[in-house]
Length: 107
Image (cartoon, rainbow, N blue to C red):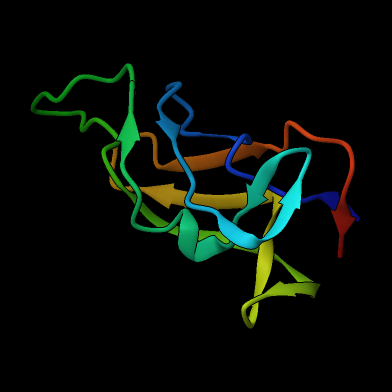
């Protein structure tokens, strides 16, 4: 089991860029809306510390995200979990998350 991600969770690229996930109003945890993978994929990355050059590209957009619950769904899709992984369009393409809440876990 892993903690469910919400709009208050931290989703980051390896270079400290932050993603602000979109929420689902049907399920609230600790005062914040839960998010699904489609609330993370395609979102902007802000604050990435890598600068664009001939050999590096700053993370600007989430290209893909994986790590949804199999059993807890909102509007037909699994909620995103703290075990999330994914890619950005930058030179440090990884993606990680911290739930920031300890009330709701899912598988």
